[in-house]
Amino acid sequence: MSILCRAATGKSTKGNPLVFRLAHLSDPHLGPLPLMHSFREFALKRLIGGLSWQLKRRWRHYKDFADLIADDIKAQSPDHIAFTGDLVNIAAGYEFENGIKWMEKLANADAITFVPGNHDAYVTRPYAGGLEHLEPYMQGNMRTPKPVLVLGGTASFPFVRLKRNVALIALSTAVPQPLSSACGVLGEAQLDTLSEVLPDLHAKGYARIILIHHPPLAHQAPANRNLSDATELSRVLQQHGAELVLHGHNHTRTLEYLPSRNGEIPISGAPSASMKSIGLRTSAGWTMFSLEREQGRWQIAGQDYSLNAKTLKVEAGDPYKVSRE
Ligand SMILES: [Fe+2]
Ligand SMILES: [Fe+2]
Image 1 (spheres, rainbow, N blue to C red):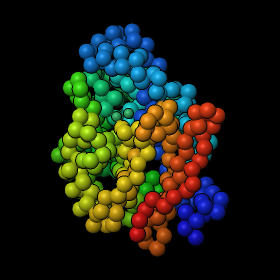
Image 2 (cartoon, protein in one colour):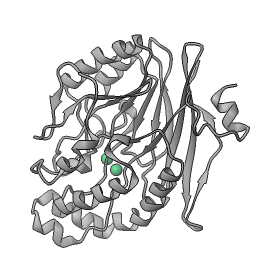
Image 3 (cartoon, rainbow, N blue to C red):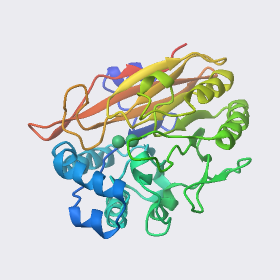
């Protein structure tokens, strides 16, 4: 019986050693953000970002919502958590200190794989006291060719974490941007390494799950907030395949497919983990993916969890099939 059928018949996949349960969350943009912190570590972009928080973001992103989402994920005890960035807002030291406390309550560093978002690299800042806090969550356990040190630190990308028969492939798109840009960049070296790692992991039978903050397809974000080398990434994915791509940044649930040599690649976008539903933006939530290898192929099912802002309860959606034949 497939994992989707099991979920639909109410039988949980929890504790089933054949099913790997991967939780995906993104973009909590943890606050609050007192304006004085924007002055304390002064940078013009940070000051404007601090003002933007006071005027706009604090009415959209609620730390209490992020806490409820984290509690719900913990209660479901996934095998692993994929976190696709934008932990903070203006990359101030104070935000990273608070953010890491939130992450430590969620799970230990071995149980969360983190990739940084544009807000985690909002301005050029020292690695120490900033992204350094997240380094334990940005460590692989497989050697990769040509790893690239990013953001002036000692964490290198892509890194690969092997968990049972699942390979989490973490890419960094976080590069400090000019004032009006929220773009991301992978760069040639990360793309080259990805081209080598994907066929190798496929040959060994791993489910290849790519974690990236920015949406990977060129049409998924406007020019001032997209992935600059999305076309090059699509070329690599189409050539080598992947079982699933998880991203954040748009604060909206999406599921698209990219044709590849190994079949269609599901590309799943997460909502913000702290957001009140506004317009097209989805309310705070997360997704559980269940992965199982059946007759030599990976089958993936998804189930969305969304916060009801009135009842403050997290509600489960219907399970759905993610992988396509
Ligand atoms: Fe975000
Ligand atoms: Fe973002």
